[in-house]
Each structure stands twice: as structure tokens, then as C-alpha cells.
Image (tube, rainbow, N blue to C red; front, side, top):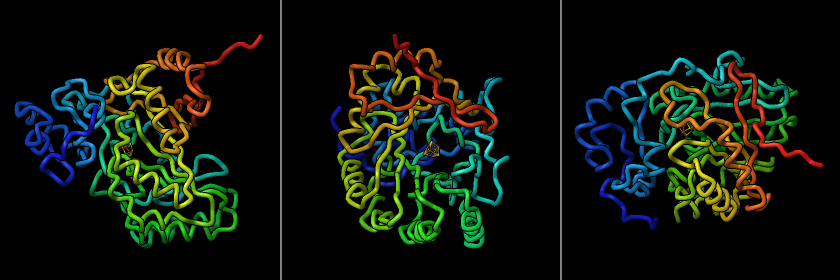
Amino acid sequence: MPEAPAPHHTRALRDAAGLAAAGLVPAAAVPGLEAVQARYSIAVTPAMARLIDPTDAADPIAAQYIPRAEELVTAPHELLDPTADEAFTPVPGVVHRYPDRALLKPLLACPVYCRFCFRREVVGPDGGLLTEAELDAALAWFERTPGVREAILTGGDPLMLSPRRLGAILARLAAIPHIEVLRIHTRVPVADPGRVTAALAAAMGTETALYLCLHANHAREFSSAAATALARLTQAGVVLLGQSVLLRGVNDSAHALEDLFRTMLRHRVKPYYLHQLDHAPGTARFEVPPEEGRALLRQLRHRVTGLAWPTYVQERPGGAGKVPLGPVWEVG
Ligand code: SF4
């Protein structure tokens, strides 16, 4: 679908009333959604709102960001903290689950709040920004932990930081002799591409190899503004990888996945992971069973270039790490 003209709002929509005023939810739904917003943050950027076709009840962009009343229903198998980050936190803001790499979470704000987010209990606009002292302590932890060769900035979304603050964090990590690789997990280049200014891209131009994992789930998220943002990053020497979540109503067809992976490649984003949904509370409507995921990928094999092929993975509960879900082929 071509991009619609910009709606009149220029700021992110952050509550049910705002969504109704923008024509993205019916007015009658507002009271129910206000109960949802009291528990889970809402944000739809102008860039994403512009991509939504409000006349399409099955719009794959709307499905990712527009809240639904059923989010307050937690299924028996859904967990409050599916990745169990808490158990692996040596100092605030750091998660050390594997010997050779660790996460740094400088803030918990995101440009948008995805309805299926596995960190939905903790992400939000108000919380989680490390103080200068906490950030200093977190970076000091990386400096004194020589087994860690890769520092992964996540959150929240690290590209919500100012270029100055992001640049300072990256420079300090890049100066650590045992850190060989930097990685940033972000949704900003598609969800709020205007944030990728020349200054932000320059902050990522480090000597140490920097990989940016772009979270995108549908080909339509790659707007012309997103293309500009991604081009700016590649010009700064950033290597782009794609990670997606397999989501009912967003990308649960071979056609949608093919389109997504091919679109990533055209924007120099190598599809890296396709994630099975984590069982965060109130996300059951997005579930696609693994056997269906495997069948979808089987349809893509030989139809798309191997470059477009991500690893289909599931996070095991309790922080036990990722396992590949296949599909596998017998050779013989
Ligand atoms: S951008 Fe990432 S961390 Fe933020 S709400 Fe979406 S999935 Fe969660």
C-alpha cells in the first residue's frame, strides 16, 4: 500500500483517547483501553500511524501497536518475565547470561510500545533510565569482566538516547581491550526514523565493529524515511542485521515473510533471527505454533536466496537461552 499523507498529529499517540481522536480505535473502545494503558505503555509514532490503514481491521502495522482489551487477560502459560533477566543481573542495567557477551540496558523507553513485547512489564516512557552513577558502575563492570567480548545495548531502545550520551557509552565500551564487538538492538530506524540524524549515526561510527539489530516485522515498516535512516547507518560503517517476531496477524504467511526478508535485504539488512513469540502476559493473540512456523519457512526454502534466510529460534523459559526450531532436512 502506498504511504498515506501524514495525519495532522506530529507527536506519538500515547493514550486511548489520542488513538480514538486519530481514528485508529473507535470511541466506544476508549474506556476498555484506558484500563490497558494503566498497565502497559502505549506509543504509536507519526511514522507508524501514517502506515496504518484505519479501514483495514486486519492491518499488520496496527496489529503491532494498537492495544486491545484482551491484553489484560493473562493465559496460564504466560510469564511475567519470560527471559528471567533479573536472575542474571550483576549490577543494575547489565544482564550476563552467557560467558562471552552481556547486555547493557541504559534505558527502558522505546519509540513505540509493541503489544507483543516480552519486556512489556518493564518498558515504558518513565522508567529505567540509568543514572550517571549507575551507568558508570555498569560500564565499570564491563571493564573488569575480561571474558565478555561482546557488549549488547538493548532496553528499551538505545537509539532513544541523545547522540552525545550514546556516543559516550559506545566510546567507553570501544576503549575496553577485551570488547571485540558492539551490538545495538533497536526499532528506531523503522519506528521513528527521524531520530537517526547525522549526529546519531556519527555516534555509532566506532573503530570497534558495531552491529545493529533492527527489529522489524512487516515489509511496510520500511518507509522512505526508514530507507534514509538505514542508508545513513550503513554509510557510518554500521553492519545491519534484521530480527523479527513471528506474529499472528502480522507476518504469519509465506508471502508476508518473503516480502519482509527481501525488503530487509534491499535495505542492506541481513535477516538474522526470526523469533518464536515469548509468552509475555496478554500476548496470546499473536501466537503462531512452532510447527506452523516451520511449515512457513519450508515454503520459503529454494524460493528465496539463502541470504534472506534467518535462524528461527525460541527463547527457553527461565533464561536458559535460545534454541533453533528448524526446519531440518534429511540429507541422503
Ligand atoms: S521496541 Fe522492543 S523493547 Fe520496545 S516495546 Fe517493542 S519489542 Fe518491546
